[in-house]
Image 1 (tube, rainbow, N blue to C red):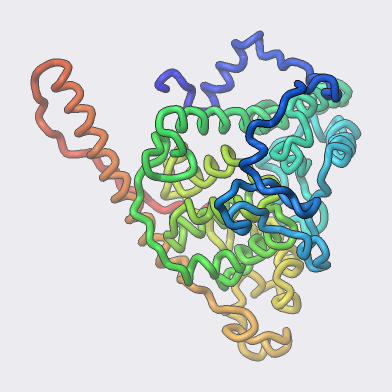
Image 2 (spheres, rainbow, N blue to C red):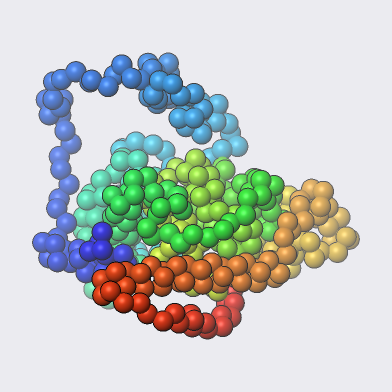
Length: 411
């Protein structure tokens, strides 16, 4: 486990040394003759499917414990608009349209520079659902990016991992490696805080009211609620939107466990992926891999500069559609007269903020600082105990060095 690269940089270094970084070509699609002719010894353990949209589930479990969150009724719901259509044919078509037909865009792609406030079409490839469900081979995607990049204009800047499209595929494999490593050490630990070798223990709160408000997009912060509304309707959010709502639920504002957020995303995202989803939640909650807890996403200013008129909010939180741009990110500040003109009453038609970000974000930063100190002390005690056992002598305790942290807003 200690030899496993636990950073993206070290993982990229490892990959570059495996066959000089060459990625094998995708395998041909299997034919009927390729499958072994043998009886499924597990078939008796599963109940028969009643409908085409069902999935097999083990006997002894209720259907709602195993079945999908979205069902046939949802498929007929005109208010839902899934961001993609399922299947390999659609996957290859989207790969063609977003990657192969746009060589210059593909070659210069940088994930951090994509927009998360685009109200119409995604600013990324939106191929993640196909990758997570096995409709698209990552090798096929890798070589499509290589092919398109070769056709790009010679003056086009070629981006590199981890921000490039190749980097996104490598990030996916890195997350899978971390999940495998965690579960190899402590089976089942990757999706939880307990026993997870890559996750720090944090004493999160448990407040059903706050959690449900977040899930339902009723926090009173339009940017956060717009993202959660998009998740409900499309089953997808841009990665920066995921960053913002994850930070808001955990260390930023509500101080709820990342496990709760990961579970909700697992049920709602079309691109839900066991390894990536849990990795990202640990990262955004500063429980693992990323530890700059004093850098906090502001639910007000984070995307204000990129979408000053709030077009994204107006689409996904239609109650606020008629508010002036001045108040679209902070509707509770709108005078009563302005609210009336916009046909809305804050606190009635749209909730007031469930917390004061300016206050709770600072309180939570102090809580996280304490959690980190506890973690450091425990790690130091474990290290000293190990040294004592190996060398047969003890060491004097030293007080942990503290450095004052100043909160930084991610604007």
